[in-house]
Length: 272
Image 1 (tube, rainbow, N blue to C red):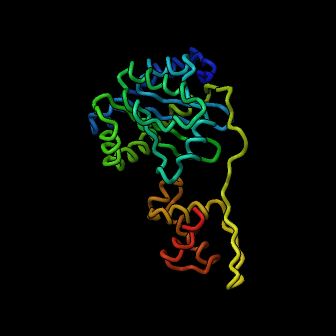
Image 2: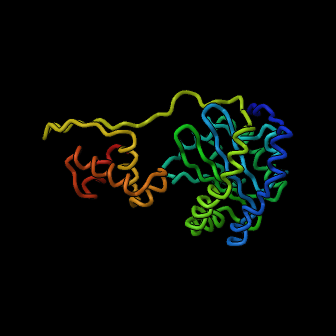
Image 3: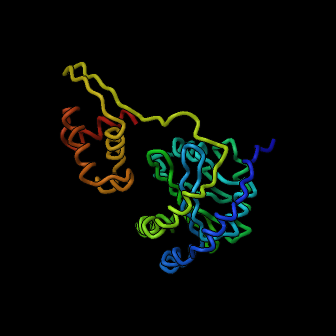
């Protein structure tokens, strides 16, 4: 049975004017010139209350994306984030062969999303997901010039430092557009269901009598360390400064009584 498609969203005239007045293609030009096989870029904020901000290099695709009811929602992105999470390094691929969106109840709708992309010469898309306080940032990068999905995946991973650098640059360069879009935000009828789950670790050591709990942020830092990330990588992932990560790690050391990286990793691996 076909999954239900999201309600159609008609872009307002004010919103269309914002897209016309701002040459988004020129903002994306540095990426397209640096990595010539990339031909599509979109930057999205999916707020927990259903509001959406989208900046896209292909306005034709964007119009059909919303008016066809094929847009993703905060609930869907959160489901992807929870399902694939840190172990998948928050990367998702949407192609005929590999679509992490297949785990969602809206699988068939997302297949139509793939077909729409192909019609606009976006045959393969990479998603990068970053969770913020009350919204999720989703960046999509696409190509129609790499035939095999695995090659596209490898191609992106080898240039991940360039992609992440451009995302940070785009966030700054596109700040004015984001501010303009906030005044005319698209509102989806689908809000995030329930509150965010902040994982908090409570532990009692019978040998030492050490009883402690780690805050959700401390747990995230510990989990990231156990997965092999450096402080700098963890800071980038959690959108914090390296000094803040270092402070959290020092607090963890004081609470747990483990002071070496190997001890902390060994301790954490039994919980993730």
